[in-house]
Image (spheres, rainbow, N blue to C red):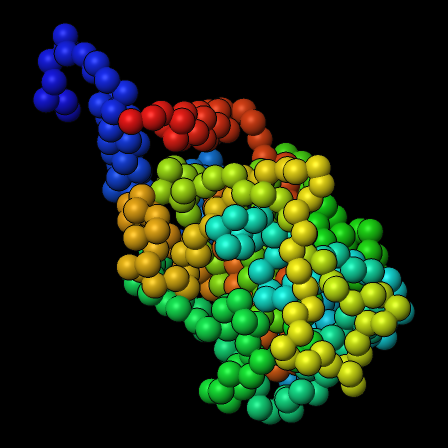
Length: 422
């Protein structure tokens, strides 16, 4: 309801901009009031039950049948499994140890994203959109650069946030307290060790994150350990997945806030993933803008790369950022909703005060349905082997209906508002 009469006019750009902003905030508030305040956690759905979440554009965590993560372990006391348990007990849950992966992939050349701090595809210094240095190496070499293999610490000294066998999870809920600062994400690339902070002498965080179907292109040997699709999702969406991706990292890597134009079914195999989720209607709160595209470059010559036995001096930067040539810009989000103190966030990004993010934890034996165009930031916790592994199935989003058109309209409106001079 407006206090202004039908004949009133806005005669200056400042008033127009203010009114448009008020209407956008009103839309955000109404969506928040009339929609979900938590993320549901449900048992394995039928295609129809799953489609209701797709139609409502609502994330949901799906719990697979009990025991699927240990189904392939030998146990004489195990009761006869049901057909459903056999279908969802993927061999990956028990087979994908570091030993098995080395035996299967050891000499296979793979693509690894390398950064000095674990933040690939993220904003740096409020100026650059930093893309990782992508290196080709064998899987064995990849593991040799991970903390669990370099033996900078004994495995018993690690303080992993996830203990294998602990299937407790919190219900996905709004983040009431955003001041969850965690020094493991500082740009000094520190590691946690029994409550102490230890500088990484190798100044490199490795993460397997190549997308667009890397399970089919670089990890074909693992195809038999996970299903080719998620059956209820394929039936509900009327198509199979466009891509299946393999992810391997540890607690040092974080995926910054972004969105994808895919319906995403995300399964954790080992470790734990922590998602911060923001619906597309809250895009205005995120202060998205253009940044200079740049790539991390390893200052070491490939022929003289250090090994685990010859670390760099801690005072010598290993990586530098180089802008892409010719000069390019990438639209991205700089704010960190889960680890920046709330007061700092609101001071730097005042519109974010209207945002109500969700925080959800996904454990082995669980699937997250992440609707297309939902913003998400992803962190991870390692298991007892120092790894966090996940697989996701990307389904092309449907462009029928008004969901895509509405999101595009909002994006264009936000861009137009930022161009209005007052």
